[in-house]
Image (tube, rainbow, N blue to C red; front, side, top):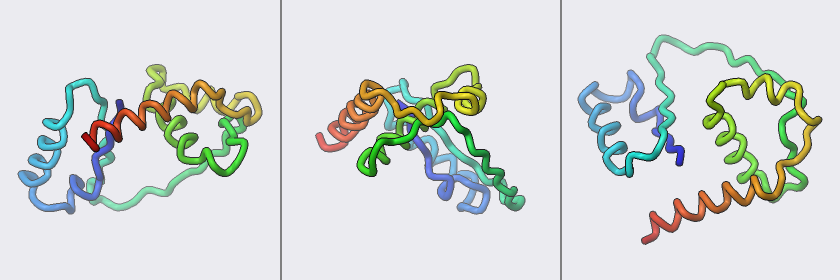
Length: 120
């Protein structure tokens, strides 16, 4: 499972370093040790321009109801790619072929399991 830590709570302009450390420690203590965390960090040194690249091989959703699952699946693919070659893979991909239903079902199940843990 991949978790995210809100960059607004841990970046340089967000309280003292002790406060930020406590927030990160508290978040990590709530896990089972099997999670990977993404934690964007802003040094406060200014912003860098975003460079958008259009990749022809990114999966295209067939209608307007799958968007959340497509975003989750795409993020999962990027995070879980050990080679970090996702840009190359999607740049020369299958001309916007949709994800197979099994791939969407996988993130649906992961999301449902996560929500059930919170509800219990």
